[in-house]
Image 1 (cartoon, one colour):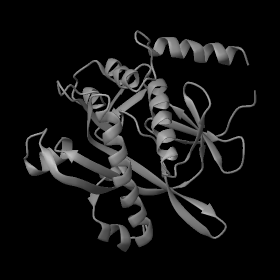
Image 2 (cartoon, one colour; image 1 turned 90 degrees about the vertical axis):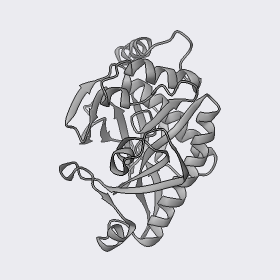
Image 3 (cartoon, helix red, strand yellow; image 1 turned 120 degrees about the horizontal axis):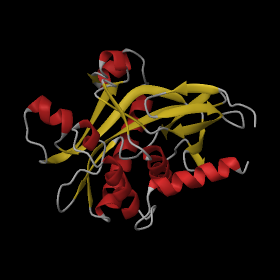
Length: 259
């Protein structure tokens, strides 16, 4: 098999040239980072779980009309996606006080917000992904006014859907981040959802115990990261009871040997 050309490597994923023009292959790594990569580690099997969870969520979002870059899952760690021009803005949607919002405002974690808050952060690790306003985004040309409206509208729509999805399996959607990209059609572009949606970029708390089922377990040295990600996958019906990522990884290796 010919060696694939690597396009980009990020903290959690690698992008390879896709089989057709305008496509990429997105590979999910087990690498874990926090605090803008100041803390680094590995969560064995995370890539397998995030691939499955993100595939599931993006498929459901596509079914309700949210445009995404997702085309199909290729194997246990890879997806075929549309190539987009990433907007250099992370959109963070908050339903509950947690993380940096708690630290910034001195409000105890866990307080339900009276209304959903949408925040914007400029994607730049060297700067610590600073929080910005819509005025900054427009002034520096990171996105146009109509693009910003589309991103905000989609973020709220995704939040409404995900909050219901997770509530149905006993999980509280505390907050999450989204990334968007431009897809070009002739001389016109439109905004679609990109990147991934997984416990890496969401705060997910058990509704009864408030147990954290997300990357905060890594950030805060709580341990049990793999088990938490597996629990989210199980509740979504993606991992059988008693199943684990070791079994999924063995299947991946078997398929590769059979090529």
